[in-house]
Amino acid sequence: MNLQETIRRILREEVNEASLRPNEKTNKLITKWIETIFSGSKMYYEEIYKTRHDFKWCNTGLEIASVVLYFEDTNDKRPTSDRDFDSGTLFIPKSIIDDLVTYVPIRRNYVRHKIIEWFEGNVLPMMMEKMGRDDIEIDELREYPEKAQVCVPTVEKPEGVTQEEMIDLVLKKTLWKRNELLKREEEEPGYIEKLYLGKLQNAERDRLRGG
Image (cartoon, rainbow, N blue to C red):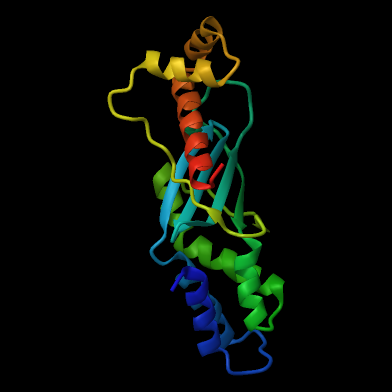
């Protein structure tokens, strides 16, 4: 039984009334639904830029949620730890929320509110621990994409790969010139590795999605 079927089974078993309003029963049902979605999921973390950090959660091969965090956007070279937190957006596939409101006739905005409330109480602390910060918040929830997509785990640098090997791959896959790439690496150490891992990530995404 896959994740979606499990969620639907729980909803059928729990809902016995034709119409429900927010109360203790519905709150417990929503909580059980969210816990089922996240149960057994794995969290992946990636620093996209110093001003943007991404988290995603995968379960049974699908990306069930993601969070994009933005930090003070300036052109200096300060690390994220020295930048003020700006905003955080939680993304949940629309189809996942559709499953709940289809079986439980309750206001969608209330469900969205309870999702954020649960997330901030149960998942956000792990994110803050990962980043070593206590000022992160979720400002909004967006129902995106339409359906849960194939999960593409964050790619890690292969053991023993050299900078020259990373440069060779980047040059093959992009319009970068070697001297320009090396100059950028001097200005922002780690830039070559970030480009290299990005190319590996794209290749893995195409493989998993049959591209």
